[in-house]
Every structure is written in structure tokens, then in C-alpha cells.
Image 1 (cartoon, rainbow, N blue to C red):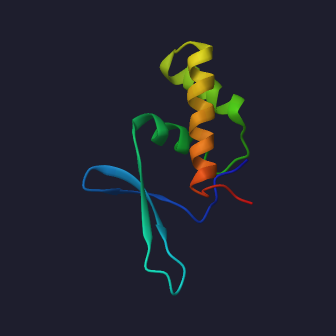
Image 2: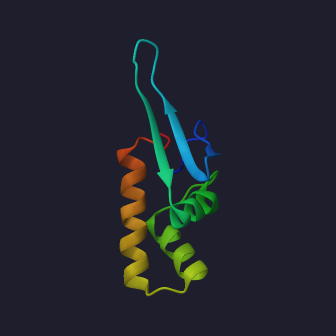
Length: 89
């Protein structure tokens, strides 16, 4: 998987967010707020192909957490990227 290059993280009012504009005719703008860990993973994985194992390894390397916890957290993060349509098709 790969995070779509059309999305960028911006800092607004001390929060790191991804802003998704609605298409023409839609009156919807979604803002996705990133906590410290999700921002770390975004920056670590942005611009390259990765999988859950890559994200898990990054969490273990950065935070020194247990492999099972890292795997669950990485899977959850990847699932949210998919759910929010932030991945390239």
C-alpha cells in the first residue's frame, strides 16, 4: 500500500491534520487529526510502498514497544488509512 501523494499533513492550531476537500457539488470537507504516533507513521511511510509489518517495525524501532502491541497498532493505523481513502488505488 502507499499513502496517496495528493494528501499532505498541515499544522493548524497546534494540531497535525489531513484535509480532504469534497468534490465539486459536495459541501463536505473532512479533517483527519493525527496524534503523535500516527504523525510519526505518516512521515515514516509517506512516499513509499509499505505494509503492516513495515509500520509495525517502525513503531518498535521508534517506541521500543512489544511486537504484538506494535502489530495491532500498525494494523489499526493501516485500516484507518483505508477507511479514510488515504491510500493510492
